[in-house]
Length: 205
Image (cartoon, rainbow, N blue to C red):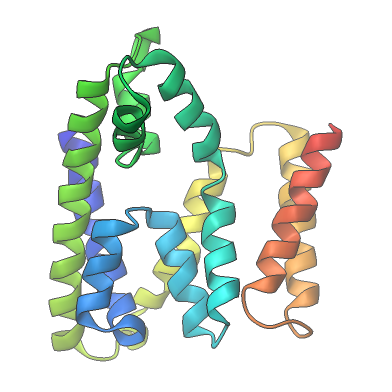
């Protein structure tokens, strides 16, 4: 998990530097420590930064984390212990932690998942704190182009999904719909509408 942790440290720093102007110092670090979801945190701050509502920001974050319902169900089925233990393990569940622990078709253990997730949580939170401090020192981050971290993150997440024609169609249709609705709806809602449309298309497939 150490190579992943290095990436989390840098991404967390980028998030902290950009979010501090929107959330403030304490709330930014607290969000990373408790929410612990890079894509959802970036989405939440992006919506709030664009003067979107808190409801739209939370819906955007929730929609990005729907995949954890399936992942948590797999953990619950494969890990021994009480429901509280399984729920506690899932609190530090991440895509990378799951991929590393379950590599090679191994049955993931609760201890390995907690260790992998805790490694990421530590790196992500420390990175966020570094970014908060750096953001206050550097000043205008948009002048340095760091505001591009928001869309860049989601483009990076998207690229691993575009292996099939149906996925490409869904991505293009969602992007076009979001652009078309942006002048009409408050920030956050166009993305949600595009995501629902893409999900509906995927369900029909």
